[in-house]
Amino acid sequence: MQAEPEPEESAAVPPGRYGEGSADAVPHQGPPDGFTIKGNAQSMLFHTPDSPYYGRTKPEVWFRTESDAERAGFTKYARRPRKSTDPRD
Image (cartoon, rainbow, N blue to C red; front, side, top):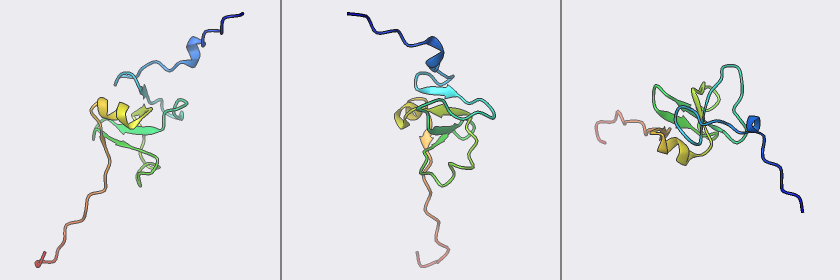
């Protein structure tokens, strides 16, 4: 019986500056495999693919899961309800 080969080091994604589950964004490159959540370090918000701003957000960090982003101190983008201008509200 043969042992299974070890995964290649180059295939593994080293943790980014926000720890395990994060990957530093590289300009003009897409995300590493399995990393689909975009993080903005200035706002400390993250955007999932269903966010209306996902397409126009330039990631500074990628996350594998929402939990990884939250553990790093990021908050999920949520649309805020508009304030009413009606004085009866």
